[in-house]
Image 1 (cartoon, helix red, strand yellow):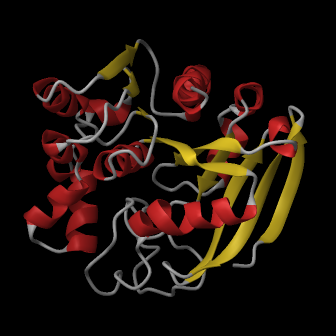
Image 2 (cartoon, rainbow, N blue to C red; image 1 turned 30 degrees about the horizontal axis):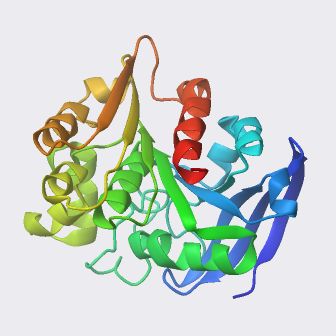
Length: 283
């Protein structure tokens, strides 16, 4: 599949690039960022996928998180896709609210009209994007991990839990842990998946983890204590931790005093997350 290079910037000896392609799954043009560390010039490198949160594009993480030095040192390719179909879907109402439609794909495969044709972010992240990356970049397709923030933290958790063995490790910043119980999740899931709540459960990390039977998965979560969305009951990490504890699934939840939901929070702890993934990807 043809990739069109949009930008390329040298960074810590490697290159931060952005590409555009025609997505078969989403039936529109999609952009993604890819960081190629210096090591990628001579050998195949493991890949870390990063899923961003509500309203974000592929740009937020690559311009604000400050992950490049750690990724260069650890020899990780880092892929940061957009968060929803964006270009040319022309769906009525797609731009009416910030937490549904454009910029808010929620990493599900929609089953409801008018969203089901384009809003298939789950399959895009799980299959189409990795196939594209594997075919076009010097990566080791057997060594991949996943991380994300907020809505993207939800995406990272469900992809790791629903596909045992696919990802070597998973981490998240302020993830939406129990979407079927929070306002954001209820709005998105009812719109994309319809009114049958049992269909929602397939995309809820707190629900999925209760039946996880795959290889051991070391989960790292950072959560700001002063996160306004934590206070508003949108994230519900305690529900996820309780479900993991019940199933004896290793999870570390670090509550970070004074930090909020922003990229300042992510930039502070991103190196810890890069190292967390490198431990498994470079093993």
